[in-house]
Length: 343
View 1 (cartoon, one colour):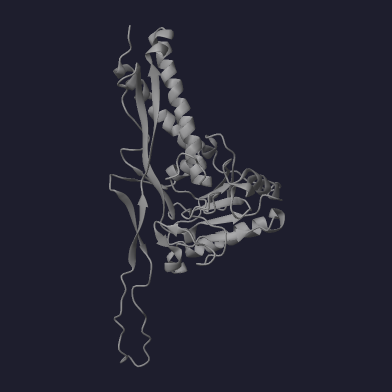
View 2 (cartoon, one colour):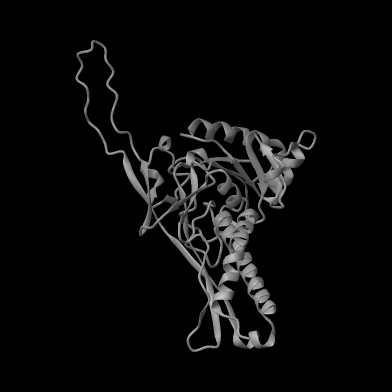
């Protein structure tokens, strides 16, 4: 007996939530963003608009006698950072030939389930690769934490170099960092371990924590994404006094140490030296989820469509659709520690 599109569709709908949860749990940035308020939803719009304060509204008049004229010169402090949506879709297809060769409803349903899990695994790898390293070959419209990608991109958020217009040149939401005073938050903090984590690593982490805390309008560092070598170096440096965070955060299968109030988690896609124009690795990203967020469309959060027949073929397909973007509200509260993969 032929299996209806409705039955196959209901199979996808029934396992969709579990597969999405698994995808989020297996990508550290997504997992912690979901837990700690780093994900926002919007209902539409051609672009994502985030208002940023790019200058000071007024000037201060110092009073000596009280009769001095007060300067009423003011500026419009807000300027929108505009982000294009990143849209992508992945199909799940089954052919009539496959249906006939796999007799029984259960066999066909298992094929559909296996293919959905395969597609979710592909999306997990590519989303993680693009968010962390900025070098996905297929999700190039999605923003990245990495400000120094192989292709020499100019929009990644966390750049190696001094927090100045000369040291960090990428545009953020179409805005040049050079036009925005440092105090208004588009320059991230940065620390160079100079190829020696044992000498500079822990000091650099504490310096970053102090600098970001002093500049964060709200919140603090909640996640430290580390390269495999960086994570191992941090653990080695703390071996006699290492401490682990709440076991609930270990349910995704990755080990997690603590630094202050932040979880330190390794990510296999952290870009090594060979993957960056600067020729030195990004060892750790320090993320404040009040400064960097993932915005997703409320109807495009890995939404699954019903199965439909493909005209002109014997196949039918469903689609997994995502619409969202990585955005920055305040990069001064976030940081990158680099060149610390060597102990």
